[in-house]
Length: 297
Image (cartoon, rainbow, N blue to C red; front, side, top):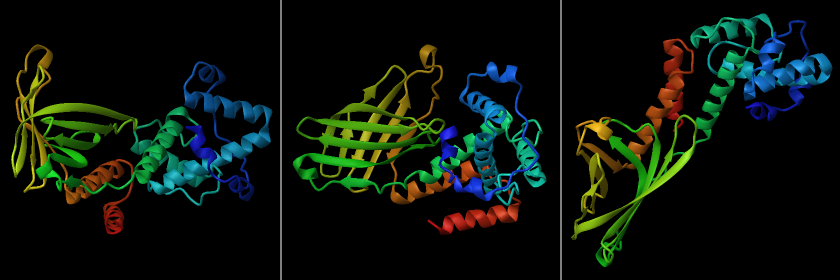
């Protein structure tokens, strides 16, 4: 996490004067017992403060500017971004801590407060860097000769999946198979995973490809690709809700390749869900912020 802040220009340090107000650190005993990345960062800062004050001034200023930028961006009112722990920054930190349910310290170098700020900074930056959805592909020009390709964002109904998921479906009439390749990104740790399934084809006519059932202990899956509707739909029905399958809901689930409009709407909902938990604005400002973001798309 500390590397994220090293990207800030060191010219910030030269432009900022120091203050006599020095952030407090956890005790040496507490830091010595903390082997986490955040604990190591704070322990390093504390050692620099005692052994190399110029290096400590530089690193702590960079961190304080980063904290101030995040507080200002989230609407807690810190600024100007000087790298000085002044009263306005302490007040902004206390408002942030209150909003996040953290102990009220006004200190940017407590483990809980700095960890939360760094985690939120990473979350917002990851979302801002995320590419826009790709337009779906429905390549049916070789339908008559026995090959179809469909790919795009994979949506689940009626309950949306917690993952950002894309899919690539290829069907070959000669082999009577459809391969589905799934790619999922976890919303919590941004880890990419992949999976693959093969469906046997039951029928292939001028309008539609229909698969044979693919059965698992708890559920049955059926794939349909419709040329007229330009759609690819996977339906899941429940086979059991007992024992190993007790987690299953006795209801049909449908997954489909999203249209372009659906993909954009899903991204908008996802963005608003993330930002609404982070930004601290009064309703009029929040409304203005959302309208500006929407108009930029």
